[in-house]
Length: 295
Image 1 (tube, one colour):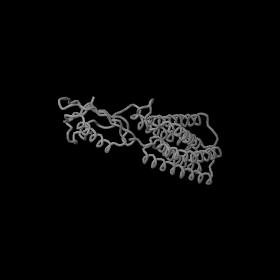
Image 2 (image 1 turned 120 degrees about the vertical axis):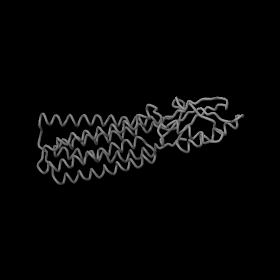
Image 3 (image 1 turned 135 degrees about the vertical axis):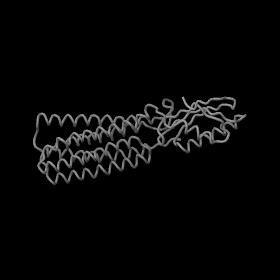
């Protein structure tokens, strides 16, 4: 069983793209007016938000869960590849922020000037970012979309970045000019951590890491009457997104019809626990013996 969530994902990405462009324009405008390095770095971070939405729209169009002749296991890894693209954008943003801060320390730069009106604009930006992050995460978890969850993680890092920048600019407003440069470094660390989180969540899907402990599958299979044993169990994918399970099943059956009935019961039980799942079972007679649960 597969669930095609692409229409929902596209709608969310279009809405967040428009909001991110609005946020980016405000940050660039205020950053240019004030000369704040940390705010311009934050604006660069917002550029990656918009780029991520566009990347998500592109990869989502290719990530159909349904198989075809060229992709018999579906196309959902395209979405995980898109999430890795987000991690790459975050890495680039981190580098640019640190480079800009070091250049300001070495070469100096113009003094940062900030007004209360500009601080209020940044609070509006913060509110939009918070809405986008929670909206994407809520919908992403509901439809099991890695690209939405990854983008929500990215946007949440933008929230913390903006909070840090606002506090820094309040300090600048009070006369502490050095705060703008100093706070550029924790901003970069927050961006890097977001990229690492996205990478860590999506690599297991791309490298076919084990999705379910074979002992769990073994225990469930043995709970079905007529199952003597199961072995050579393998699984991959991500639970709740798409799981593939393979196993050899030894059944107490003297005819094909009975063996098929037992196998269907095992499949239904596994689908109940790990849906959506595609399951392949190789049936073996009672005389066959093997204690090798997995590879």
